[in-house]
Amino acid sequence: MTTIRSTVDTRADEFAANREAMLEKLAEIDAEHAKAVAGGGEKYVERHRKRGKLLARERIELLLDEDSPFLELSPLAAWGSDYRVGASVITGIGVVEGVECLISASDPTVKGGASNPWTTKKSFRAADIAAQNRLPVINLVESGGADLPTQKEIFIPGGRIFRDLTRSSAAKVPTIALVFGNSTAGGAYLPGMSDYVVMVKERAKVFLGGPPLVKMATGEESDDESLGGAEMHARTSGLADYLAVDEEDAIRLGRGIIKRLNWTKQGPSPKPDYAEPLFDAEDLLGIVPTDLKIPFDPREVIARVVDGSDFDEFKPLYGPSLVTGWASIHGYPVGILANAQGVLFGEESQKAAQFIQLANQIDTPLVFLHNTTGYMVGKEYEQSGIIKHGALMINAVSNSKVPHLSVLMGASYGAGHYGMCGRAYDPRFLFAWPSAKSAVMGPAQLAGVLSIVARAAAASRGQEYSEENDAAMRAMVENQIEAESMPMFLSGMLYDDGIIDPRDTRTVLGMSLSAIHNGPVKGVEGGFGVFRM
Ligand code: COA
Image 1 (tube, rainbow, N blue to C red):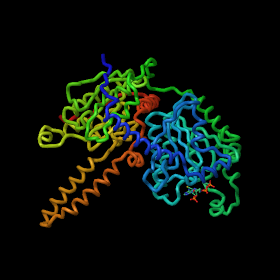
Image 2: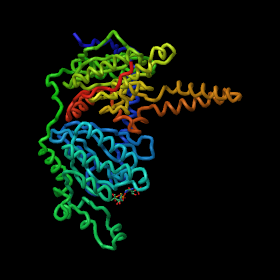
Image 3: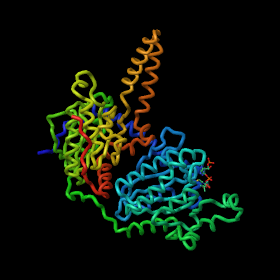
Image 4: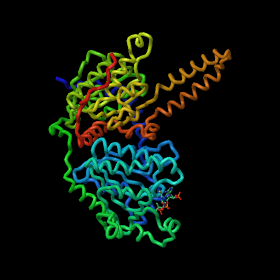
């Protein structure tokens, strides 16, 4: 039997306290999500509605198959910056006529839908997800183009958006633009580079330069409609393939286009008869201790995420601080690597490297469940080669070609974040729980290191070291690092694809795996780099 047996006591005080703390964090995150949903705020939403237009989220809702879910990506982008939470664009994966598509909708209630530096970063991430997972792209366009005051940060890198569209097309992954309003200047290349273009009558405006600019440039008198109206593009320029009478009609036409794509997924199909986990996902709220220094058993998480709570543990007696094993999620086979005791030792690293190779041998995606303080330090460990061992794991994860999924449950510190497939190691998707924290090391440790370095520097200069200043510096640094390690901050920086409710982990991973299987799922063919032994 490989079914996990749970020992979680849901009546224990500790469980109740953990659950309480997690619910508090979730409420804080929900409040930030609500800011993204509010777009540009009441005044601009009201104005938009008065113009008889649908909100960006309503457009998405109508586009998707009825009652199908939408996996929103990077909803907290720009959190903590000078820009609105959400970065004036909504991106995510949704099902249209049975096809999983990457949907991107500019939010015209936020600065006219103009792209600021965070909008660009969020759009790049969405484009990467579309390309890596072979997802058709649907752009719902109504945007003031580049945010003019920050043009220096977006103009040059922003060209990638149009390049990615045509590369998607070249890779035989269709792209569709539904134009609801303004799409001027560089923005004109959104429909310009798409395979299929729908424009809404009397609403879409697609021109390289509007009437004032044309007047300045050539002296010619013109108007919006003759320069870039939907009718003109449908009848005269040919840029519009379909003329929609209104927004609903544009959405209907968009769905019709997807229906005719004859889309087939290239990855293997999931097993249809999978079982639900034996344990309640609700328990996931009480498993992570409020103090991340206290370890928790990741098998309790796995038991609430995988099909039938069935987990075939690999090498259970060796390197016990990392749990590895085979399972399936929504019928998709996966290999799982999950931190148990926090620290990674040499044995754990070697076990991880072997396990990653095994997954590549059998073309099986990998799921990384993070709760690590990093690789073990100290004389004994340095002398036994912890760097080499960590390097084995980092080599394996870097060169592995099967799709990777990462979930930050708790700590994800130091090179442990790298070995466990952190953001820089290109996991197809990376989600964080509200309890997650990530940084080069813990705040107290980092402040302590700085203090030791400053003390030694003062001594070498023959200067006296002020204990008072030291205490103040440590407190300040600790606060700063604590704030910078928090999931909202990291999500705002686009270091994850979203903060999820732990109870949704199975659903989110299942949807991610389903999206991934639009492309082929293949392990390494050409081998890994040189494994340092
Ligand atoms: N950069 C920065 N801010 C912009 C912007 C842009 N490209 N486009 C619009 N905004 C701002 C406006 O200044 C306004 O800000 P405020 O509310 O703080 O005053 C807000 O967004 C809403 O704009 P508004 O013009 O009132 O909205 P609208 O719905 O009537 O019109 C546009 C929207 C996009 C048609 C219009 O704003 C426009 O033509 N913008 C310039 C488009 C352009 O030429 N872009 C070239 C970029 S390459």
